[in-house]
Length: 294
Image 1 (cartoon, rainbow, N blue to C red):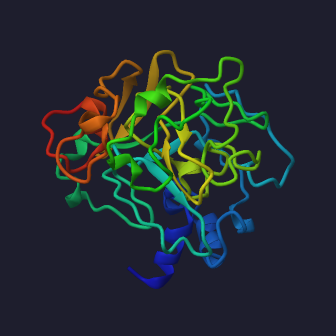
Image 2: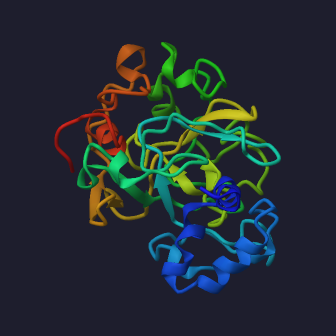
């Protein structure tokens, strides 16, 4: 991997890399030419790509022209059955992850690394865009203190991790991300979910396979390292559309089995072996040695 490619990988979403295959090679070249900047600072990224929008999602209202969140997407890459998390620093070079999905922060995954089989592994899915009033499909827990034992990125491997506490605790009056949700500066309206197609951060271009589709989203804190539960979501009735690593598409129901989600040994993220999050977690992991597919 060249240093220039590594720099671009550290800052950009998966969509930047497929621009040449979307008849957007000129845009890719413009972004690559200025890749020493963070993607949110790169003026070349400020282009609306309607091909990255789902017609069913009408929840997003356009903001001021030029605003960083005025270039959203409805699609995101899977990090599998491990909690997404965000690390903000000058280069993102220190971000590490134990993602078992098709996508990993600051890394790339080869087809040979998908030992569970490309037809059995999730590549991408849908996720609804937040809007300037902060609402998002599926909602956000009123408090997530019961879901995460602490704000460290590997907290989801400890005995205190309890995804069901996130799934079952919603603000009864507003489905918003407020307080300590969605990681760093979570109360700022310029950090809208899926608001920047070009950005490589979890909030903007990643999902995980722990909570079932259209479940609430949440993170452990507003710390600079924040595990996140970011389930896929859509306005399609009953579930979400997905793409597998072999290129085939499909539809996943909200009722898909995701394990007990109650913490303890049955609700912990794993770095190896079969997923603790049922068939949904198995679909997200690329090398869990689980049999079967969806």
